[in-house]
Length: 78
Image (cartoon, rainbow, N blue to C red; front, side, top):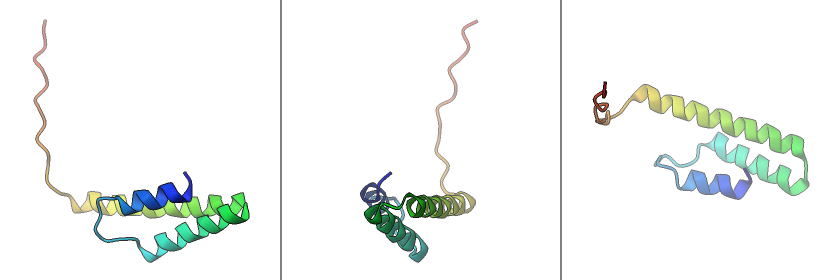
């Protein structure tokens, strides 16, 4: 995933918090790696971004939220 796609995903996300400083730093690091053509820096930044996103998602799951109602399963035709 290139930098422009990741920035767009962050901007269009559901969270109103904005970017965390660590996330912004990792995105900038990734952009520098892409510009300089250094795949090692791009890989490091991508791992950092994934860790930050996973951390953020785990926080959302711990907080909980509204449960959605689901349809009951269809009756079995036996």
